[in-house]
Length: 389
Image (cartoon, rainbow, N blue to C red; front, side, top):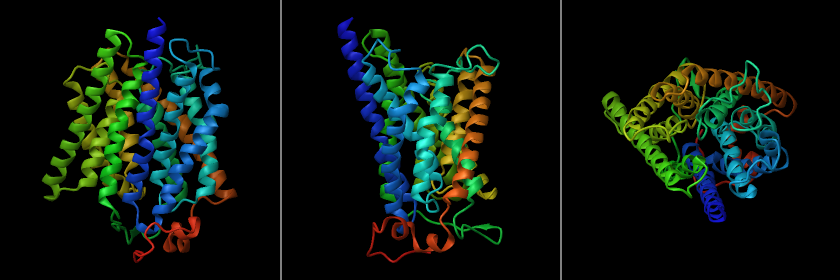
């Protein structure tokens, strides 16, 4: 028993470390997708999100989500906390990336505190944690979401949707009813960031199994990681094929987002599927990304990193997929999606609306033209480069 405790504690800490590797993953992905005049601001936001969200979760969010520190006895309670803490910043990374190039840092930090201490912990409480709605008609504790297609990815996506609706698009993104293309500034960084996220996902999903000290658990962890990787492969391949068939071009940013879409989609139930089902789930996930990106642009929902398509759409799809491909209740999965979506969107919309009124979250057009590196940080990542409009 003591050896199992030690092994599973080490496994939780190792998985947590892989998840934290996603912090530079998000940072590099976003830094590569924005213009050079906004790179320092994006990097600052990513460091801020990890620090502030983790501290808010430590001081308040974790106890609220799980009802205290003494609920875990199969591994060290400190290791369990660190594993759960590694997740919290991801919800805000999704939101902050989608409002890049037009969001001020200070009000975003305030929102990060609220998300890390209240909004995200409420979702965890209802699904993985203490469940204050136990026994009510809104009880969604039975939803199956192993590593957070809904709890993490859709939560970040709903929050981002609220932010975009309030803040509007970047300066000059839409002109005369047409989408103005704003190209990525650094494709190597985009590729590095996406692949770091992919690697981190093995801890994200594999660690969510909860232990590795028995033969059964070890097999489940291995299956979970294999299925996670398979879905990512399928998402990348299908996105690649669709893009080539439509445009006769290989768009690496769309291929990588297709892979991330497949990874999000499989996150709800990678431990439940056989070795072939994730191919279909990931393929659908990758195709959803390709088709959703232009739809969001037509709706004038400006998302520089494609987070709505990757995280919100595939968070929903991945949670539904569990109800389709396993014996879990599809109705309960849909109920969980609805409850989380309504709560997170409403709470985020109200919070961001008030923040935008009090502090003004959105940078004005002149500040966006100048670039947030100069305005917000005083440090340019590429001072020798000519600024783009």
